[in-house]
Structures are given as structure tokens and as C-alpha cells.
Image (cartoon, rainbow, N blue to C red):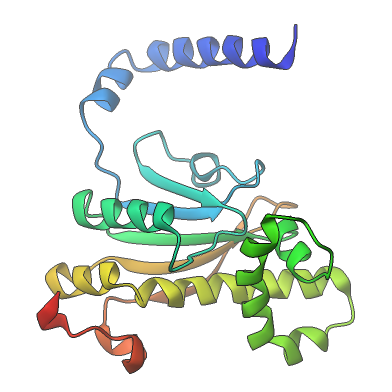
Length: 213
């Protein structure tokens, strides 16, 4: 049996198991989507949002990209963010990185990866901000993992610079922004930061005139 065929068989087994446990599971799932959380995570196959959090399909709205970035020109990410915040009205946005991230490690190097260089540049900009601290770390693994952490915190800051978040804060005092890092070696989440729905936390130069929103 090839890996593709195995996927289909596993899907069938999973579906049958869910129905045995709860015969109405898929009927409820098809009928509505009311997640409380938006997850902005890394595309790494070892970091699945639902499994990490022990949640069922429908509980977390998910966007993933290399190194869990919030890039202000990324229409894909912004579209997901607006839908989650304006339509689904999530109460929490979680930016979740993970230790040992390949995208972060690649950004620390001078190796050329072709098209992906343009994406990695966003991470390099984060590294530049924290370069004195990161360069002072001798162990390469620790250096990568520290950049993982500060990158998550910077992406949280980039979220609150968007008019999408600021508008929601004005209208309903939500969502809260959370920064997490996941440990591949132990399966545990480390909380790095939480930003409450307060416009005063936004640097004034990035603060939109709320009367215009």
C-alpha cells in the first residue's frame, strides 16, 4: 500500500470512529462554524493546531505559513484574519511558533533558497532588531530558539498594527492576542505574551483614527 492510499484508509477509519463515538458529530460540524480561536501557525507538519490543543474540528480557525508570519502585504493571511475577526468574531488570536523551526534557522543563514528568500527576509528583519542579543548566544540551537521566541512576539505586535484588529477592539473589545511557542521534544506550549484589547498598546504611529474605521 502506498502512502497516498494509506491516507484514504486512515480517513475512513477516523470517520467511522467519530460516528461510533458520536453519531451526530458530522451533522453538527456541517451545520455551523463558531470557533473562538484563530490560529496563525507554522506550516511545519509536526505542529497541527487541533492535536496540540486537544480540540475537535470546528473549534479553531487556522492559517499556516512558513514560520508563522504576520506580513502586512500577505493578502492570504489578512483575508483569513478579517474573516475570523469580522465574520466569525473570534475572541482570541494565537500566534504559535515552534522550537527548532526550519524557516527561522534558514533566515539566520546567508544561504540562498530562491523564491523563499523573499519570505525569509521578513524573519531577517526581526533578527536585525534583536541581533545583539541573538549574536551573543554561542549555542546554535539556543540561538535559533531565541529567534523563534522573539519572532512570535513581533508577529503579535504586527497583528495589533492592522486596522482589522483595531476596528474589532473598538467595536467589541476583542480579540485578545496570544504568543505561544510549541516544543517538538515535549509537546508542551510555552506562553510568551498576551495583548489585551486596548488601543493604547499600539504604538501611536501605527494607530488608526478609530473614527475613520
